Image 1: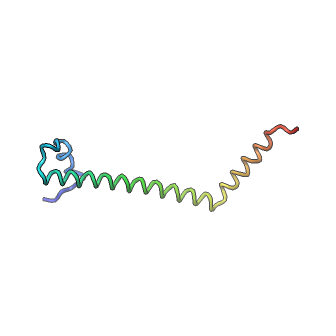
Image 2: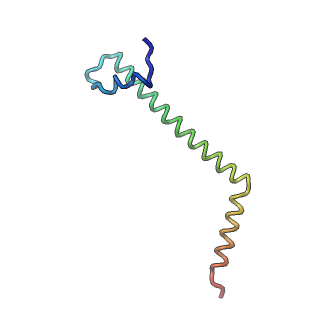
Length: 81
């Protein structure tokens, strides 16, 4: 029998760990580690995505143009003495 974590994990999550055998506890630990790894991989992917977006914006010069536009807008709004 091959364990499929995407289908078979439910039979371990419903059970109280006190009532599990040693092999079931090992399997539960493996499931928890896999869930943690998947979550970590998802977080890393999101961070890398936003890093790529920021790098693209910086390299394209859009950020500089936006900064210049905001500065010129703020200079126009300040009252001249």
